[in-house]
Length: 101
Image (tube, rainbow, N blue to C red; front, side):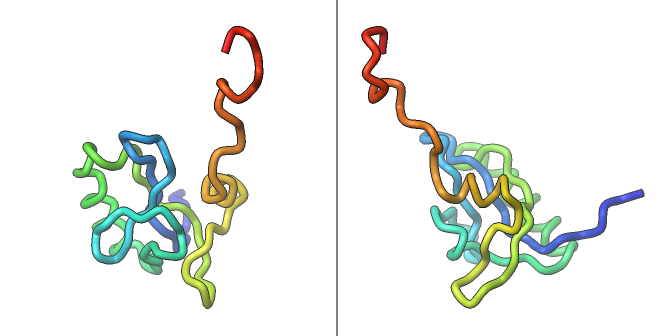
């Protein structure tokens, strides 16, 4: 049985930096989920994912992340996505203060 469609936004990682990026309605990649296109139907989601998957020199692993629409724009609606949207959760190794860093 197929999973029911859940509205969301397209999320991926930027190829050069690894940072989380989102696809805007214009097709541009943006850094904030609030600037992303909120996708409310399965057909649009399929088309947008197909287009995003051709941009492997910019975005890696695009997928539809569950989201809800708020007054400020789309917001991740899953703990994993909320953590990804908030940025890295670990400091860079060089800042750990170890002699082997």
